[in-house]
Image (tube, rainbow, N blue to C red; front, top):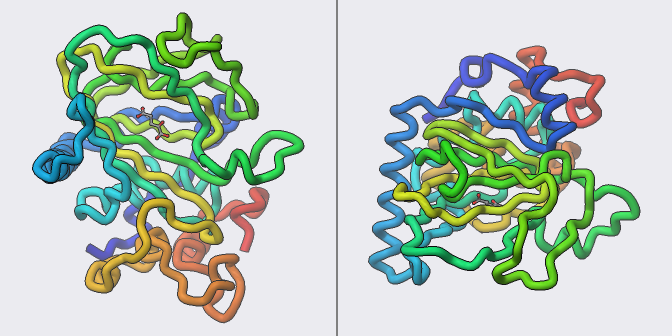
Length: 292
Ligand SMILES: O=C(O)CCC(=O)C(=O)O
């Protein structure tokens, strides 16, 4: 499963994608996955769902929110440096990154009406409490969601966002977080077809909506951050897996024995993604996080 970077990422982020991402805080990549990839990932998600069901780990509605799925099948690993989305990820974050967090989610249709439950948040959990932010919070991570089921209309467990809200550290909450009246101003339910991907800035205010359709909602999420951060939902990558990975995928699963290497310094020097992109002449020195 080693891949040649040059064929894996024929493109860099486009100016239009960068402008959309910077101004709106997210980007929809239509048809990021082809039908065969959707089928392979669906099979992998269904396998995990069956395992979790057997182990009694689904919630009362039969939902699965399985953290750390990256290490639970090769179909997930193929998302790490996917040519449709990865150029956006490194284009925004630079080369000193890895995949620190992932989840495979299954949400069957709800059996009936439910009170509205407030799920709006920015990603980053304690980062938002512990990092001083006299101005706008730092971006720090970018996440890609891959849609395996259709959410072509609202009400199917769509991904909701407030476009442009990544510049805002706060969001007014209703008094009552259970059964509140209205979604926050500017909220939109994004639509997606199987194979579409949504790449988003961790700071954008977002929420999952309830699934009132007849279709089970299935999606996989992969998030990237800087190598000087820690993995969120895995601690060790099995040695036999590491051996089979390309150097870039090793980096993207956190490899880097020398701690200074995580800062892009020290004897181990720059990580493989830097060398691949630099060698292909794809780095733009006018973007600070793309400089050596
Ligand atoms: O499932 C969704 O649509 C939202 C997921 C989410 O909130 C997240 O990944 O941070």
